[in-house]
Length: 575
Image (cartoon, rainbow, N blue to C red; front, side):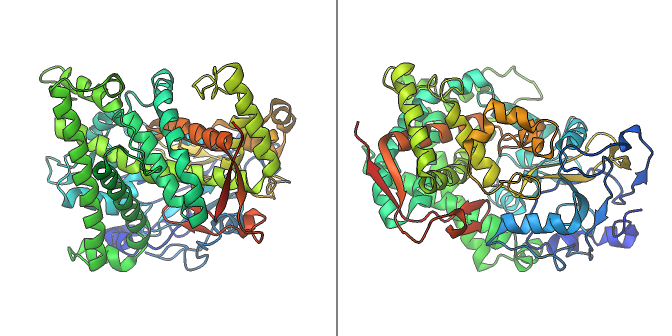
């Protein structure tokens, strides 16, 4: 019996209070699908118990430790997060509780203690991935402010179940989630399809680079990268070159509209995932149906996103009906989505309504503003702090543009075989400064599971921790070396505890399994394109002599772990 988890009927009945009193947390779990919220662990003898773990040198069946927990507030009073140093906090927590431990994260488990189980062995975590089932749980189920906003604004994604409960579609699980998810990911996740959008994404990134010098001098690079991400995703979604980052749209009214959309998306994400989600007071007021001033402000931003997003899609549809779309627009994701909507067989239960299709596209455009830009911002910081790395990257990309790109930054140039240092650079950035506190988190949705010789019931929440920047596991963890991803170094890590960082689960920040980010391939192409164009056009340097290392960079966690990018100088290179 695991301490702090066999909570009984009274505690289970009080579960909503645990959701209301959720506090700031540092990792993501999954909602339990189990009918009981009792976590039992039964030790079993296993042949795998002999030997040592190749990732850490610890015993193959490590001891399960338990962080102390209290009802409603979980483990947070005993080990509160340090939002200014999340990487250090996570490493210290792991040092305190070990490589396999339980922790109370309120709101991320149906247990009143918020119990989740954390490990750093990716091979063991694969068992959890295989136990996801047909309708796996996902991180978005825990984004309660977004779910509440969708419901309050009568989103087409939200429906009422036959038993009167609310189904949040893409932000839930079950058949409705599957229908919306399958429609959304078509045209995004397929590698060949995603590759076909690179010319447009690359063109949007190239246009956006002209805004970098001014934003660098003003110290507004975080916002600049938000708008650049919007520009690149707009080329994919609508075949439109918005030029919000460059500030040079042909139609000034449209550019103002795009900036308003970006600003509203940024503020809504900040408020929903930080100001609102981490406030017990706001959670309680929301559950009671009381709309605070902060809540109303957040909803206003969401309504702006919806209003502008709807206008953009409606204009697109009207021009399509009049036959006015150009070839780039006809090749866009939204045009393809409309064709797929119209081709749905009549009477099929898996059909989506037009309003659902539009909502999925608006939601994708909204998410694109803040997610990809966080990944790009860390890459930009590492370019500025590591001049030798930057020069190696510049020479590689420039040579590939000349040799295989015919003078252009093409999809062929961005292939790993032609720009291996670029791929290694992106991978090294994700190792040292990942945007999420953990690699992934899942629950075994379909069947009981055995982890490290102990059995857990359906619906138990597990987290795979990110130890790529922990010096207890990676001796030179704080050194930024893209070369560590070259074949010879990867081979040298085999059979050692450092091999962890090479596992497929640690490859990128977009999750794994059935709930992997549907726009992950598009997002990665955006990062590759933006960084390549910037390094081709400018020599990027930190303006302040006081900023020399990563420790000098301020960081925040709202909602992702992101740098407050300092002022940078963008010195034009000779073309």
